[in-house]
Image (cartoon, rainbow, N blue to C red; front, side, top):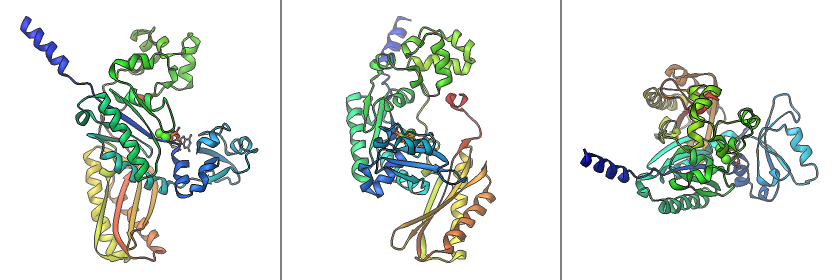
Length: 378
Ligand code: DGT
Ligand code: CA
Ligand code: CA
């Protein structure tokens, strides 16, 4: 019995803490625009989703940090942004170019993947990495690795990013939001509570302004305040799932693994053609085979997708892409093929160069079964 206790303790000490990175690209769409037009770097840049009503109707997708100094931020009407920037004579307002942002994202993700034991794609400008194995659970080496990753992105993609490092996804994400842009915040396991305690409650992912107000009415503003509520009180207020999530989050507890699901590279295929071509019949045979391949991976992982894209790498190695968002999520092979072939026809309509490589990818997933993330319930 005594022996048993000792060996259990010894085992516990041997359990190394996990090391998780959350990486988020800085002012992403606006930074992409700066990349292809470096002269924008010195100016306020506002990337806008113009609505089809025309004029200035629509909302701001994001803005660079120059524009943010004027109070311009994601979600505000374009009209407000223009008013706030009225005194700045060099502000630039641009429409979104999602295909281009996806290309930048793909190259950045390819670099990031090389730094992870396990890589989890979250969105165009965001990913989690589990680096426990390659750092041996050591936070000094993790901090060094994170800096190397940031440097690699800057030198190979010219992209500035912010990284949070901690023992789980939750705290890593909060840490990446702590200091931006070009930030690196490392929160070792024994520093988690002192890091979280003074932060405002809304730093917990999933807690929006409504939930924040509920706590403010109770006289609570920081995560440390939140810890005064026991799990039963929270469950009573929000239901068991959300209540337990908030209870654990306030204590920096999150067991969810970094999971490779949702990695777009798993759900895309590209081949080099036997010969360069721009013939529909020739290309369509390869495209159908690519669709079947991608479809197998999607079905294997219980996913449905909403967006379909194809890519040409042309004989001068430049790329052309075209994508389409469906009305509803699907995992239907015929619909995938039909849409991909349609995109093929559309791209070929004004194709000048020969196509050398042909790719297809699906995106915008939801899972059809399994463990939905608790934060989705907010
Ligand atoms: P930051 O704070 O340096 O990470 O800035 P962003 O712009 O990267 O912000 P983030 O990470 O929240 O969002 C990534 C991209 O998602 C952003 O570049 C544009 C898009 N986005 C964010 N919020 C909104 C929004 O409210 N509306 C639209 N249409 N797009 C948004
Ligand atoms: Ca970002
Ligand atoms: Ca983000």
